[in-house]
Length: 246
Image (cartoon, rainbow, N blue to C red; front, side, top):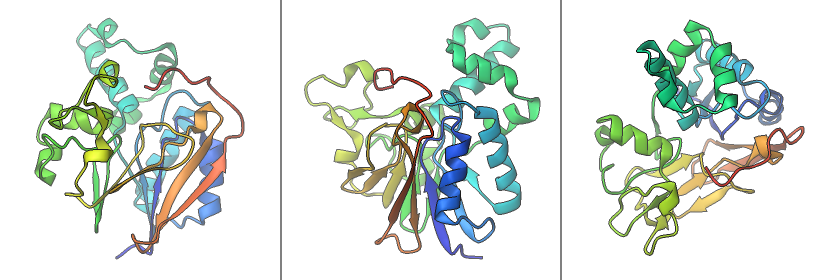
């Protein structure tokens, strides 16, 4: 059945009450609306496990889709390394470790099975963005670990469209990926790059509006991709002081 609306929600980061406020505000109807979460459900906010288990339930009862974010990826990597007695090398923060130790085996299995993209008619949802140099077709998005890694981490690219590390963002020729993205997958909707308002590129929208840092939680809602609505609810409070962009 064709969904009546698409509702794409930015980085929640454990802000369960704000997610409740947002879905109430947009009038989300499980089974009628297609809900897509851009990833980073967990860490930083007050109730990561509550958010994760709620979305797990909505996946079953309402067909919700939740993508892999870099914070979920870190937890999966830590779990894998821990299973091989190499957990110390994963480098989780204290808050990420707290989340990890609250997760049941079924939660960890669910996180590990998160897709890296959602393709809709005329649009693509990913966590961070598109790498112009290696993401040429839909098959390229999930071709290998490096291709998936870029989907959850990319911010800036060099003059040739290659992903730069965060510390390289200021090198000559560096540009945000969305400034050079040519629309090959349609409109890209993403999170990851926190900002005060919706981040708009020529063919993209960024929805991470800093909820866990006292900003707001934002959804892009549309039946017609040419006329999207952006709905936000304010953070109940500031849960974490923002570090450098990361």
